[in-house]
Amino acid sequence: MTDAAPRQPDEIPLFPLGTVLFPDSALQLKLFEARYLDMAARCLRGDTPFGVCLIRDGGEVGAPAVPHETGTLARIVDWDMTQPGLLFITARGGARFRIATRTVQSDGLQTARVEWLAEPAPQPVPPALAGLLPLLRAIVADAGEAVFPLPHRFDDATWVGYRLAEVLPIPPEARLRLLALDDTVSRLEILHTYLRQHKLLD
Image (cartoon, rainbow, N blue to C red; front, side, top):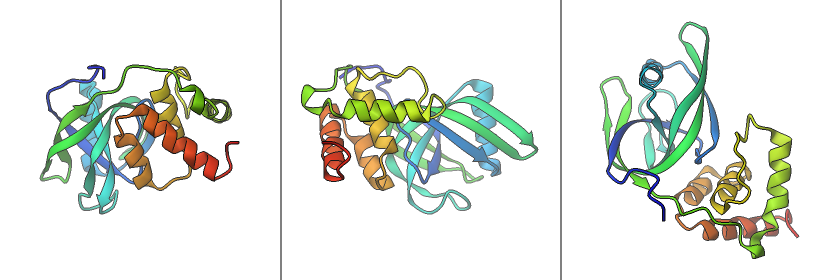
């Protein structure tokens, strides 16, 4: 395993969502609640990230939702405010984390002390699973760089697994389980089995 992510727990603001963010994924959000507008402003001023977690209980709007414990760091790479009180941001997925402790602030924003999850060293897709690559190449070419930001690392099995996990029509909880897996090859094997069962691979 590599040590690209920090070892020591850190504290970050949380944004519970109804979707799973994967490392290197692009995420577009429309912010209008005061707690998230303030959070985004602080992130932009300080060039600091926030954490995205799938909602376990609750909703994206209103009372603070209970998030699942595994999430992904997000850093704002673009923003636009076409009217007061409405902010559009594009964020990029970073390191994975697991929530250690969570706090709900008076304004409803949540923060968490997190433990960072290391990523395995880059490795090619095993020959037995190489049938995944033509499918992913076609998906990426069709969707374009707005959906799949550069660089495209088809020679990295972890990147390939994350990209397939984010686009396949599977429930959010299944995406989360794939995100939480530390074994890159196991993730690819699960995806390969799914695609064969649904006759999307020979």
